[in-house]
Length: 383
Image (cartoon, rainbow, N blue to C red; front, top):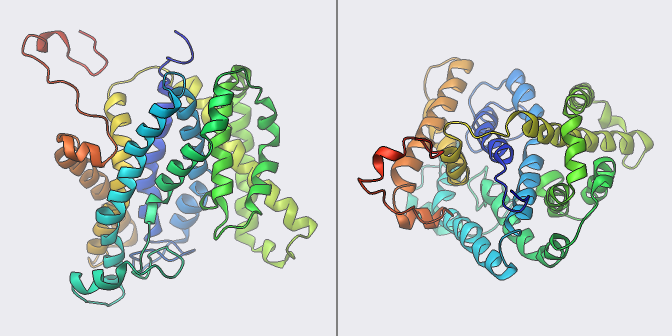
């Protein structure tokens, strides 16, 4: 089987695991000591903030952008550019616009309610669409919320397409990225944008393109695969160092552009990139075979992403009013949000052609005939 048509179970599994981690991450944001969120619990938690938010934040969204770039390399192996543009429009732009109109506004509405504003839905919608502030929506203003990731992917898919098509048609050497990517990320982070990190479009575009290039160079992939254990150890060391510096507050005393400031910023990017490489290598080593439920979970991961944060905010809005301790509240939000999101996907999204279209899914497969039923008992097609 050629690399163009090979099903990369490891990439599917990594994407599913990364999307599931969003339940942990955004549930922990309800208790976060670092930043505001749509709904906050009266108690905040240093432990959750550092063990979930600070630990996941440096590499989680970068990994998703790299996986999206890798998926683009595979997609362009058996699609014309024109077909790819149409598919990206249907599977990214349509869900993005639908999400902006229907899925996201309840988060801002509940954010206002959580802050004591009890206006009606009609009153809320009357001024919600006025774009103002930092677009976070944490105070109830207009926001793309978590769908910024999907909007970025759509723009990147079109803007980078001429270059990606050219690279797809010829051998590419990407081994230099294994070492040089932290410098690329450091430079991208300095380009003008409202935010740093993945919400800086130059930064996330670099990660998207890097994911494409890594899959284009089999030797680069083999290096990552062979060295995933040392890479994982390096990720643990760099993460520990970064967290210790953040925890100490030492970076607050460094002037912008000073040697310690630049050196630590580079270390942060090394940490991000080593985590991404380690997880790609570990995925290739450990997750390269189909497992029960992977096909279902892989198909569900994108609608799950679209739905999950609104569900978490709604569940948290209810749970913070209960007389629970911090850890039971966190567990209640995480478990209930996972169950409700899966339930919404299964009952309202997966089974109907219109909702599948709105959530970026392919049309449902043809109905299985009674004659076929005894032959297929599993999603992998085994008898």
